[in-house]
Length: 171
Ligand SMILES: [Zn+2]
Image 1: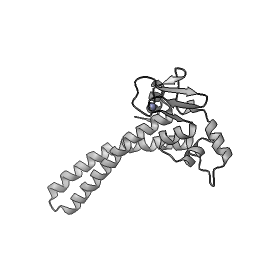
Image 2: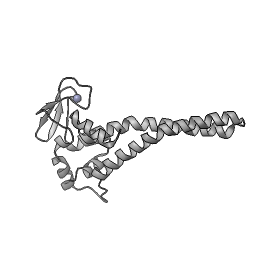
Image 3: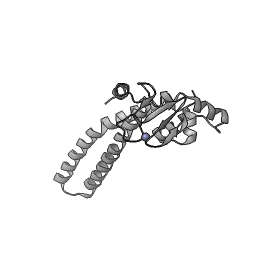
Image 4: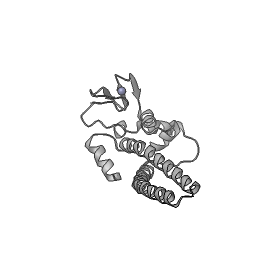
């Protein structure tokens, strides 16, 4: 999958782009870690083995795993670059009340898409009936019984801190 595919799939399913990217990364990263661990273990076995045939077999296994790993890593890197290039704005120093206010005013519909009006399925729980409602610039889910503003929605969807969310929403 390419960054483009993830973004167009997000559009098609009415999911915010950054949410789709984070979900895809959450899917890719454990696989990458798993393969890297496997390759590392196989390399250790090659070092320990004195049998040339065993060494050759393990080497060919490593080769296969590296082939599998390469596209996953490329995709994860491309997704991270896309998210960072677009959203991460490294700002030194403290966040001010004005910055927090600006982050709160960041349109929540750019974070959680409402393509069909004021209701949609909740992205925070398994939802088949639209239980999330849009009010001014915050959302409420009647199943989760919780309300999110732009900051808390960003924190939860992207797994970032309050500060990181405020910085990401300075646009
Ligand atoms: Zn919910």
